Figure (cartoon, one colour):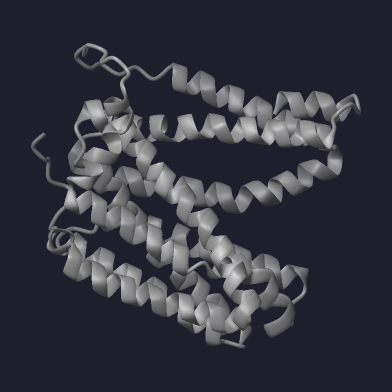
Length: 318
């Protein structure tokens, strides 16, 4: 960010330099996310970990809503200032992280081998509960990528202006924020596996309703439900990945989980655009929602241990 700020201010930034900076930021985040996800279980007890995940998700959703709006205001002042503000906030965040003290028994470092590199994948493959939750989320997001087609819905089907498109974009985050607030006060409790599958089914049904709707209020409500149901799946999956993974494996498993999440988001947008070019935005979205329901039904049969999973707030044996 500091590089982009300097290049913009002194007018020597070029398009290839921008792409290089963005690629570097993406590479840094690929290391940052697993480390951040692995840090949380060391800071809070397992009994309240689901609430901690909900708090973390709530903060992320609030930032997702306020960040672009605040960034737009800052950009009107100066493009250089927007990059500078981002760099300064990243620096302050790094200082805050450096001040966190974690007391853990020292563990010997294992040598880096091909087996250790792929150990996260091997671990997930042999844990049906984790494998089921991660792949369920992957395919649900891959098929139900309605948000990637919001510009087409706003312009061609709902006849909305730029403000209307902005409202549609904010709706899933508002739904997620509302649900995380509820989950902080009312944890999922028992039968979380069934609740996760119910949330994914609700996600698929909301996607279908949005694809069929030509009423802006119904579409907005469908996106709210879509975001709210998605965050339930996120909380359950994130809690399972962290609580069911030994400390020494948590970083590698989190990295694989992050790879699945990134893959589903990016490929989901590509899939939505491709199918929309074939059948139109509405039919493509409906088919994606139906596909999500089919996957949910198949996963209930393929991963019965996940469907039968009871509570997240019980300490697990490692």
